[in-house]
Every structure is written in structure tokens, then in C-alpha cells.
Length: 128
Image (cartoon, one colour):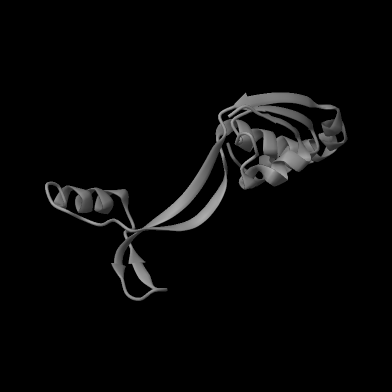
């Protein structure tokens, strides 16, 4: 059962084990992505203000209604961040102080900027 006592006991054990983290070596890789979080505009009110579609179902309805017609779908970027299970796990481990080596897709020949902080904390080798 997920109780406050269990959570407290887990936190105490993790804190007690924290001095061992720098001795952990991890090799992780392969699936780097640049995640971009987007809003789909429903109604544009001004250059700075809009109402967004709030569900995938409403987005699907909008696309279905446009079948066979010309349409416009406006996307507004909210956040761009590192993604992929490998980089997320490797970044978290490096952030905790583990020695991490990552091999995978972070941009080539130069790293994509979203991976810059991760590359400062871990040894990274980008292949694509």
C-alpha cells in the first residue's frame, strides 16, 4: 500500500544510499529525440492571444471535418526539451551524480542545443 509511512521509509533509504551514487557507472543509449510541446489553435483572437483545442478528440474532429477540403492547422510551440527514454534516464542519473556514458541520437555533427546541459553532466557520443 502506498502510505505516507512507506514513502518516508523509501526516502530515508534512498538518502542513506546517496553517498554510493558517484560510484555508479551507467551506459545508456540510442533513442534521442527533440520533444516539442505544442498547442493546436482553435480560435485566433489576436497576434498574441488564442484559444486552443483542449483534447485530441476535438483535434481529430477538426481534421475529419477538413477531409476533401483545404484547411489550416496552426501549431504554437510551448516548450522544446530533450526526449527519448535513453536521454531522459541518462540525464536523470547524471543529475544524481552517477557517471554516465550515453551513445545515441543527439544531433550530428553538432549536438542539438536541447542536449547541451546533459552533455555537460555526462560523457555523450552522438551518432545521428
